Image (cartoon, rainbow, N blue to C red; front, side, top):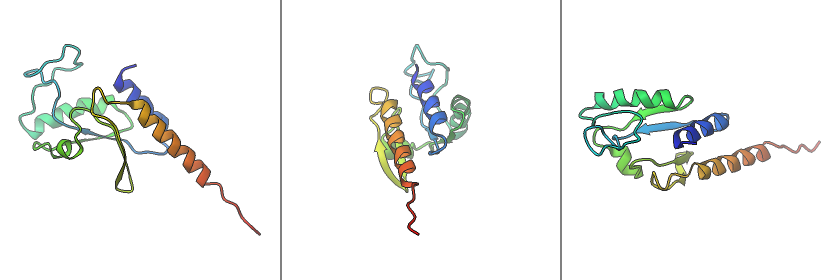
Length: 133
């Protein structure tokens, strides 16, 4: 299963307890730069925000159920989160509670799934109320 397919599966499995957001950053393998032979799309280096927005439209189609936003041309989100080129985060109550390794080597969708499963279990257990009458 590809990383994208695995991510899509997590999005569908945990949509009831989590909102998913993809931040589209600079292109890892632009068609006019460091080209990857297995890149599904030929996307040139972004020269302006409009280029990046057009490229992000492709990502939006690939991750239904997720919101997709675009990093600015200064790549401030990428710099702040060290996402270069893929990284998984879980943010809860404005705090990072899970930070995955840097991708592609450190991209572990199983860790994300495990965290979400523990969270779901905690939610279920915390919703059990005991009433004394």
